[in-house]
Image (cartoon, rainbow, N blue to C red):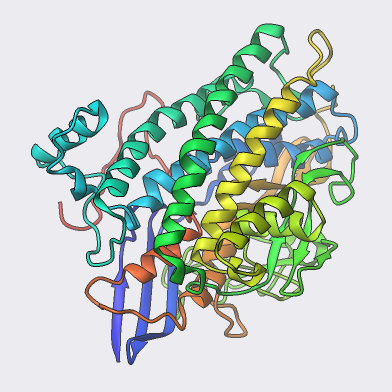
Length: 519
């Protein structure tokens, strides 16, 4: 019986460790371990609750917008303005969030996942005239292979010309990501860590110039998605069709819903473009009851509390806890493991009868003579993310025209409150929840349950592995020295483990630098 340890697993956000025990070349046991302590919830204790909209964005440098917005959903309820967000505030929140979705999905496929399938060495002997490929070849000639190495070897199936085209798209995607950031900043002020989303709405004002600017950027992004991103995902699927049967894991899917279409005070009743709900293997959309969400820390480095609702949760580190192996907690819905992310959202829309989603999903599956069950796989997650990216970009063009220049963008509210608030939303990587307890105008307790906690959380107290662990178990590994099957499974979830934890003085001076692994 062999054991594979990948630590750190690279080309993801943050520090993740994966262990797999093999028997006869097949994974029998798997562990995923979050190796960073976040603790930002504790930073908020005793502070002005409004600080959550800024501080919680520091959980992540890729999807800070989602954390800021989810914090504001919780604050909307705590301040009693959750039913009175002005139209402009609601629409601009969607535009800021949607542009970040597009950026994050492009980043994930090209800069994080594609190199599992694309062989950059195909450019090493390029002698053509394409300026982008010539620069990549010069880069390789200098021996600076940092973005592309280290990697596992042995399973690159694209032709040389397909590899070269994909590498050119990799470089092009860097510019498109910048453009998506600029689109976010039109109404968000800057990126990362926007300054516009606040409790009650936003601080930005709508104008004709901003509408035109935003639309122009989204048009360019949509062209890239249609002519590069979607075709490249299909090309990979054609060359790696076996990955429609690898990395399935749980068939329990959960979506909190995203992109508000009204401002009803009850988030569970609010109409959202991507719906809220639970989808299981029967592809029926079940109502979501947030009261059934719990977190437990049986195998996590935290003081034991048992399964508790986030309102009753705590974050007390216990690094020496026997048997624990992760800084991630184990969230559950009604006691069940749930996968979250683009696949869960697209299945929620599919099960809910969304015509556009059904056409695109069925169209992709039809190319491979596959049924919906093929979606529970590595390629299913990549396809769902690409489809969602296109649909979100299309909706942004429509939503930006709903803005009404000169109209209100934010509701007023009293600050001295004693109340609780729940924010349910979706980050690009999946369902995101923030819960705040405010007492006398100060934060008494704050808890965040993030997408990668759902997907990469450890085994619970009943011995049930987390979604990523379940996806790894049963996988056949051809070469234990190059376990590319395992990293492809993990990266298909787009894991994100608090990539933006910084320790600096108020003047920006580094207090310490830490090297993980050989220097």
